Length: 183
Ligand SMILES: CC(C)(COP(=O)(O)OP(=O)(O)OC[C@H]1O[C@@H](n2cnc3c(N)ncnc32)[C@H](O)[C@@H]1OP(=O)(O)O)[C@@H](O)C(=O)NCCC(=O)NCCS
Image (cartoon, rainbow, N blue to C red; front, side, top):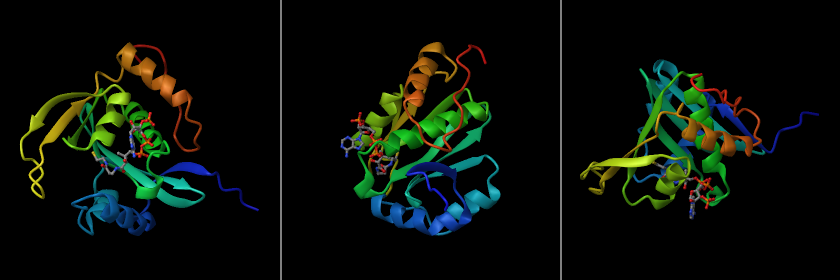
């Protein structure tokens, strides 16, 4: 008998895309176009996408692009009825872990100014709002808030991350970065 861990993080595979798109259409005002994920997985060597499964079912996903020294978070989403259960934190912690693995120095993202849940999540990991792009989202004219981590190797950022990371016991999340500074 195969034992399926209740919660697990895995790399996103092409066969995950239909389930990702169902969630995408549920939670985002402007979902990515149909073939965007297929292109990302097949052709974008800077891209790294993960999924979170609960009892084998895909309930969340996230991704980043590693561009030179930066890890740019491109997306994160959790199915509506599974939000508020800690899965967003788990996915975001997994993205930070991958940023260490990929040799990034900083992380950045854009978020809708009114997306309080997401902003709180990023702030919880120590990200800070450093600017705004006025009317960036063309679907409703909302501003984008640009958020950055400190250097992910800075002792305070890494200490906080390690505290959070050690509390997350999820298969597939990867190994904690070395506590030494610099790496
Ligand atoms: C943002 C998102 C990924 C967070 O995932 P989640 O699984 O709901 O988040 P978690 O349960 O891990 O909660 C993380 C923190 O986010 C905040 N939060 C998330 N959902 C919340 C909710 N429904 N009500 C209040 N706070 C919430 C809280 O600060 C929470 O911290 P806490 O548990 O210490 O209170 C999820 O809400 C989502 O998919 N939203 C729609 C898509 C989206 O906006 N993505 C971000 C684009 S930049």
